[in-house]
Image 1 (spheres, helix red, strand yellow):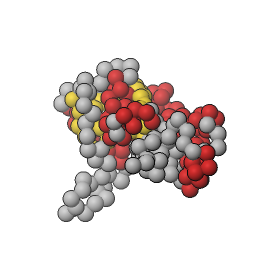
Image 2: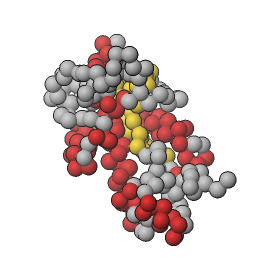
Image 3: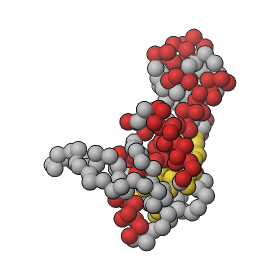
Image 4: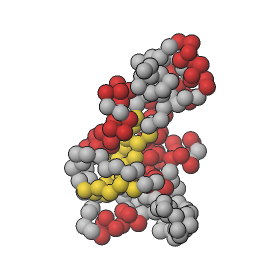
Length: 221
């Protein structure tokens, strides 16, 4: 069980941006529970910026009596730590995962596709969520529960941090698999982001079916 931790503001008192704790805590989850919501899901996604591959979303409902130690924004965790926490989350929490493909991203845009994947991740939970805490500025349309958007939520809420870990690990695994199907692009090293190695591979081989053709420099106006 993770003990409650005192948090410290990392922004000055006059900042226009929300103060975030030194590490995420469960204060938002407890507020929701005090309002009568039993199953509170954290929502996050991974893969908005890459040139290739899906955007992956995760919804995680933590057990308040058995919160994994060390949950944090996936971006600040080392890969081995993310993998370790991923296994613990999958074994001890309610988890839903969904993705939107490169073609779905092209048909709409990355924002719409990300929100759609988040909505589907909530629908994939093994229990019905009563409330959702969503990383970012937007609440996915069509959610079957009340929700609150939290800017920098993966650094403020433990359940969103858990969702960020699940989404990141799942997407990385998908891209590692993609490297076997589409060799030559190095998907297992840069995960589809616009690294120099990736750009050089596109120049040499052209795009593959996983590339997002509406993203620059792939996009041709």
